[in-house]
Image 1 (cartoon, rainbow, N blue to C red):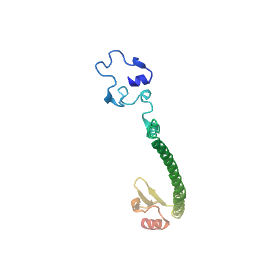
Image 2 (image 1 turned 60 degrees about the vertical axis):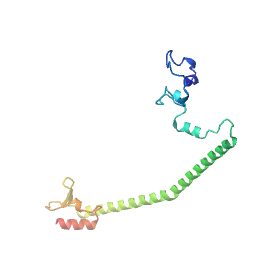
Image 3 (image 1 turned 90 degrees about the horizontal axis):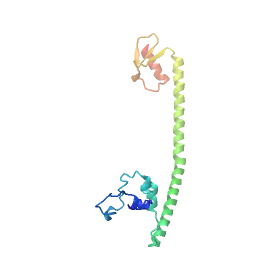
Length: 172
């Protein structure tokens, strides 16, 4: 009934005979909402849920003028925490930009260089041994027209020209 009266329904919110025999608005109910148990009706709930509502209650400085010093102290602390949070955020961003980004760029450049070397070696192997073949189904490497094979599991990746020389020697 209290919530219905707050929403402007007055005394007409409940049909006649509703809640008979029970005291209206019993004192031990606290903030319990009998009509919105799951909290699904936003009109009844108002701003009670969610992070914004919680923040407003935590930093509610209007205590009716009972303790002005606590209100001012709370406002000062709120502002100080805001400045400290922004300062910490700026320091973290600066550290990220000065340390993490260059390290990531160096790793990426190193990986790019290794990939280019690997590609160059693969091209050299293909040019040197055009008869070298591989079967993905059987996971083996062989020479075109040959009868010997080498399992791919025995080959260390990425394959270098020296490794390719030793594999071709085994296959001949």
